[in-house]
Image 1 (cartoon, rainbow, N blue to C red):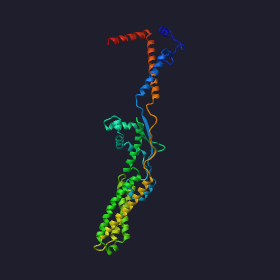
Image 2: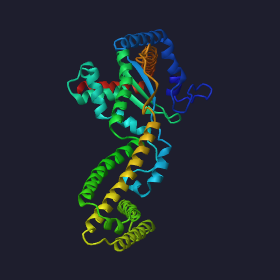
Image 3: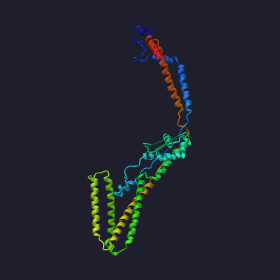
Image 4: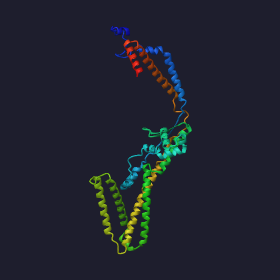
Length: 393
């Protein structure tokens, strides 16, 4: 074929073995493989055997899995916030959004939890590192935490060379999450309980001080006539509502302009409350010497009204929190795995054999085409010139 082409005789389409224009001839590709098929098979089997043997040098890794259900928001939160009214802005919470599983994943991936896991299982010695941040990096590579998109369950997978330690670490992650959520407010009910508990303590201190001041002012019939109990109760409710409206107005001004309809509505409501309070203060004048008692009585009723309001909301938050039950509900605790997850020795052997066979076959084809090209006088002269230039350099 090469002689015919070198003499200038055109080759017919039937005699041309090229599969594509300018592509390699089929015989030139197949012939080297056919002549060396024994070595090709031997090289492939040898590479697969070596890959299988090398996989035994790697320590087996076991994967333990644990699954838990993150807490869901209580349905009573919206009712509690509705009864709270304007004071909902004080707590900085709303009844709409629910807690996301991403929050709990973030807590488990926090430095606090990671360090407790490292210390509990002595992972710095197990990972053979002398820096804590290196242990954190290796731990992060061996731990996989993800939330299911459909079922909402959160799974914790831990890889370790010791199956018992892998299972213990997966379960410990959930235990650390339970400990962490018991000291910080994560759910809406917890946030409301913490907020109203703090407000309740502060109001209780002010109420005690107001009660003591009222007792020190003495008791007089004229003061009772000037400040009937019904008027004092009305004054206290109006003042508590005024306080809640002022707080809500300040919160709303952080995100809305003063010209917005919501802010203008609150301003009108606040002015109306202040006007009513001024009217009550003007109409309830006390006899000489009794005004001190009247003012202290009003302060006492005001603090008492706030205390009752915060106490009701605190109890509602506790009820909602108790309805949530156990914050972290374990669905499937981790068990020591019976089979290793990696290395996959069969896959390594097959992949190594396939790669070695492909590379060796490529080498045979290239070498065969090179030898064929040397039969062409022009190509042989070019290769000879290349070798000569290489020797001179």
